[in-house]
Length: 343
Ligand SMILES: Cc1cc2nc3c(=O)[nH]c(=O)nc-3n(C[C@H](O)[C@H](O)[C@H](O)COP(=O)(O)OP(=O)(O)OC[C@H]3O[C@@H](n4cnc5c(N)ncnc54)[C@H](O)[C@@H]3O)c2cc1C
Ligand code: SF4
Image (cartoon, rainbow, N blue to C red; front, side):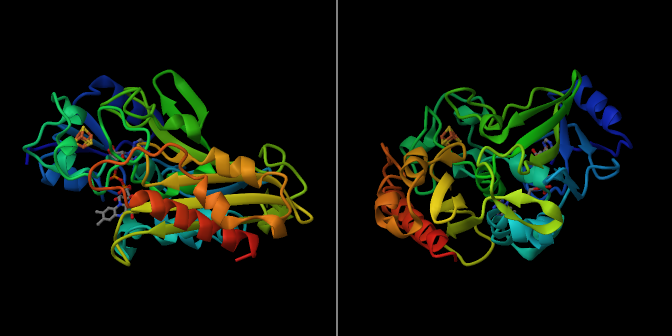
């Protein structure tokens, strides 16, 4: 392991300045549950680690005009336990609860979860320099592709590993970013980028930038539209939401496939629907044909199996991951069925 300098800035400005000064050699560290494995395994070799632990205001969940602000240093366990998230953004609480192990949930942060690196075995192997590490080929094409994507691949076939990203996508969350040119926010759907856009990165952070908060919209902003359930502290959100995750082991495992569903109801009519898939694409994947099918339907008329069959319009499975196509259809069928029955 290459020696590195560890710095704990006391302000956001200081952290941004440190990051921007030597972006190629400096990396942020939050809980360290992903980055430290990369360093120990020789996949990452930063000369300088900038910790976010000493910066005030980055940790915690605050209510804001009907919505919530989630600090980037908020732990996954804190997300899972927060009463307003459990009551009003249930899919997010479930995604956090299903994530990794209790130990990792206690140290792992929201910012680190969104910015974590891919789990592809070849990327994670210290001696393998594939396209994602600046090499000249994708080793998974002729190798093991069991855990890789079935849609959206382009020279590289990773899946985005974050559970919270999938759940946040159904609430139209925005990501707040600080950097050398100030602060900006972007919709979570634009934050993640696929290999077609950039082979080396999985998100739109520019050198020197970091995630400061995730903003969950309230009644006035959320395009799902009123009237919606009034929840804890006056927060208004989709009436029903749910996160389901299929994995090989019961605990401590990434999703083979996951799905988040959120619907806003007006009486028994579905006013609006959001469905997002994890484990199938290099970015959280919005299942728009399912959303279109659900919108305007009476709850009692929804054919969950039909919704499931629409989830992946043009799958392109690799040699070992064809199982993900029926698994996705089945998981979406189950999720839609449970949401319709109020479960
Ligand atoms: C055994 C195991 C199981 C796991 N299972 C799951 C799982 O089921 N689901 C899942 O989603 N994840 C899983 N993880 C991945 C990960 O450890 C956690 O998701 C955790 O939330 C990462 O947060 P962290 O604060 O520890 O990140 P760190 O390790 O500190 O950072 C991860 C990356 O994000 C960058 N980063 C950190 N904070 C910021 C920020 N604010 N802005 C910009 N960049 C930032 C770092 O530079 C680094 O590149 C698992 C990890 C392990 C080891
Ligand atoms: S899928 Fe991507 S990360 Fe994995 S070997 Fe291919 S190029 Fe590398």
